[in-house]
Length: 243
Ligand SMILES: C[S@@+](CC[C@H](N)C(=O)[O-])C[C@H]1O[C@@H](n2cnc3c(N)ncnc32)[C@H](O)[C@@H]1O
Image 1 (tube, rainbow, N blue to C red):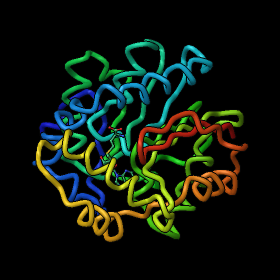
Image 2 (image 1 turned 135 degrees about the horizontal axis):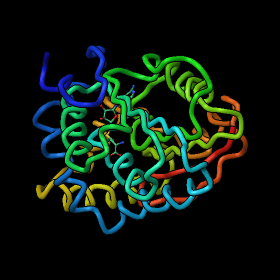
Image 3 (image 1 turned 180 degrees about the vertical axis):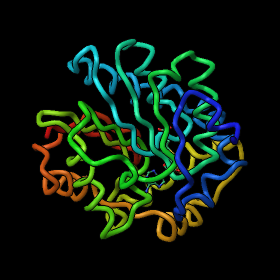
């Protein structure tokens, strides 16, 4: 039995995924420190998510896609002691940190962790909410449209979807200014200098960044109502939609 399976969370076998090279052991240990330097605006996103999801029942089941080190699970679990969470992530390293934090917070018993992607979440309309924070920009077509459909398929009718992702029209005249602002933010978080053009190249090579209107359309095509765009901080946008 590995240290992971000895905890209360259920962790399935690792699933091969292209982003595990990014979200590896070293990065997973630095991830929370990086984000903590951006807390002054990053926390706003997670607090607003909690506010908008307060309409869920007291015993809600919540699915977190790309749960990472557990930020959204921990935030929501603290405010809603009756909610149950399923966190899915292809990176065993990110999930290891997540599992440890859930244990320390004393909420492991109402959390299930799945080492995999959304296809590994048992089928069925079992969830009152699906939350996917800062994940979808890693997913290229055709899987990009499919993941929104898979999220809809896991939600009960009337269930809520919250998505946050990096979104931009990289061909727009003002994208260069947006890139400079993003680089400045990244320099604060990483505490090193960065070349904006290198960041642009990484966006092109490792991410699939869509204009906000395009990603909204993918949600609508997957069966959600017109998403409400409730948050933007530089290139990070967030929406809530109802199935
Ligand atoms: C930037 S982190 C976000 C973590 C967390 N949601 C948060 O807001 O702090 C992105 C996470 O998405 C995961 N990920 C990457 N590709 C994924 C996929 N296809 N399905 C689910 N999760 C994925 C990564 O392993 C990583 O843990």
